[in-house]
Length: 258
Image (cartoon, rainbow, N blue to C red; front, side, top):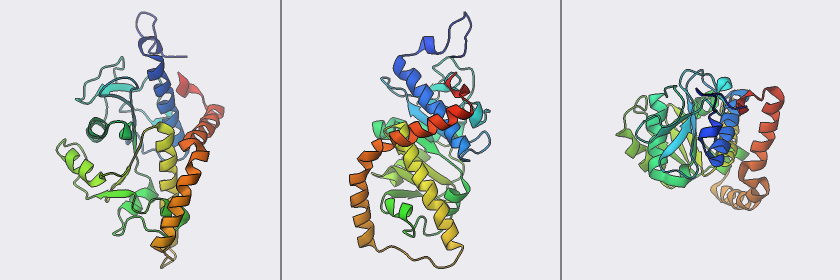
């Protein structure tokens, strides 16, 4: 049930069916990230473009843990930082500055974005070589990741141009000494990409801890990526994965739907 506003109406009453579905999916995504251990206290962000609208997106309320996020309390904000929805919560400026620039300048290819500080991804982001082809999942992303040198907390709008430039035509930007930004056209697509990046980084950290890794030759990486692209359609571009995890969190706590 959606949260009630003054006058007895709900957030769901004040948005399109498409926006409400986006709210549900984004709230579910926050709960999934939390369940998987990808949250970072009240920090970090997942955002999604509001369907059918220009330059508006949904993001988490600053001050809430991921397991407190619901479809109704997500903040609807425009790319200038204005709260254009019913929520009275504020947003984290770092989240707004970074996500807004990607949403504004990359369009649908960055319709869904996440940024995390997981131990494994931050460790790889802090390694001089970044992600190397030392495991199955890492091979998925060779040549598919941009790198951006650390400039401090991302609260300055002028850094946005450099973020986009270093991303290039890719969909993952590894912020060196900081952590990854993962984007896609859909929340399920972004989620499954983030899941694979996390696994790649976890395995790399474990492998490097044992000494020198065996690296996969580039010609094998090329074949791997070619075959992976053929198989990707069988997974519904992350849809099957995402729906499976939604079922898991529903069994644990379905308050994200409110």
